[in-house]
Image 1 (cartoon, rainbow, N blue to C red):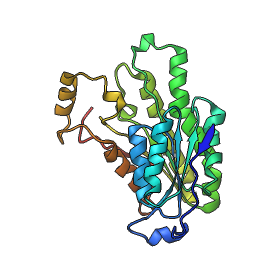
Image 2 (tube, rainbow, N blue to C red):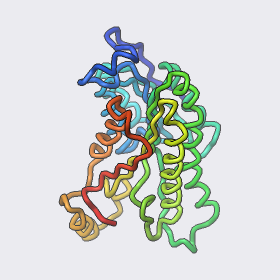
Image 3 (tube, one colour):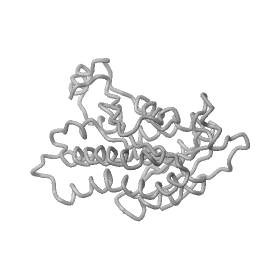
Image 4 (cartoon, rainbow, N blue to C red):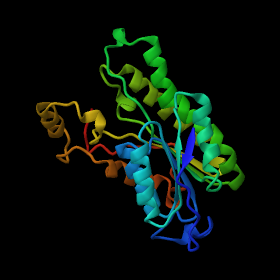
Amino acid sequence: MRQEERKEKPEEAEDIGSQFSSRTRPLAGQVAIVTGASGGIGQAIARELAAGGADIVLHYNSGKGEALQVAEDCRRLGVRTQTVQADLADPQQAAGIVTAATALGSPQILVNNAGISHTALYVDTSLEAFEHVLRVNLVAPHLCIQSVLPHMLRQGYGRIVNVASVWGMVGGANEAAYSASKGGLIALSKALAKELGPSGVTVNVVAPGAIETAMLHDLSSADRDELTDRVPVGRIGSPTDVATAVAYLVSPAAGYVTGQVLSPNGGWQT
């Protein structure tokens, strides 16, 4: 695990209490961890939370250049950043992300966005492949949550958002391992929302539909047109569509929202 790109906190940054009264930068003074911040959705989430005033801890696995560029974009918005490299398939590295994040302060926000997909017939899905998807998509978020909770519980405040998928809600053919991991993440979130609500910590899910990311790059033009035709708003979603949903759920204004699954999908009925 490597840590890079630290910057001293700007003098004008607000403390954690003052963000409750800020409408333009509602997250000022808070520390937010975003896993998978080098990918399309993760980049958009990091920028959106930085625009809201949060100091950002950006996790990446192999996309170092992308993560460093997003960190620079965030710093231009007047916040501090920290980049952390970790392989989420390794339990120790996954749990260590939160430890690294404390260089910026005690975290109040955790966005478990990192994930991998696996497309194959169920009968052709090996145990090794199935377990690898579960380790990255479900076990790693569990470890990150367990690591961040002591900080949130001490403060009596926290926002956890787990990025799942519509396939975690309805299942996807040829994506059994992925669907199982995201369905498990939704169930975990709902259980934790009940357990942590009295402590001031909310836990919610954003379950995107068809979003313009690397996962769609292999679609043919005909398949893309067919998919677009099935979306009532007439377009495939953008990473920003997901980021704005996350930004609401981690805001102080969403304190009465927990255990919910928000699905930015353009009305797509799967």
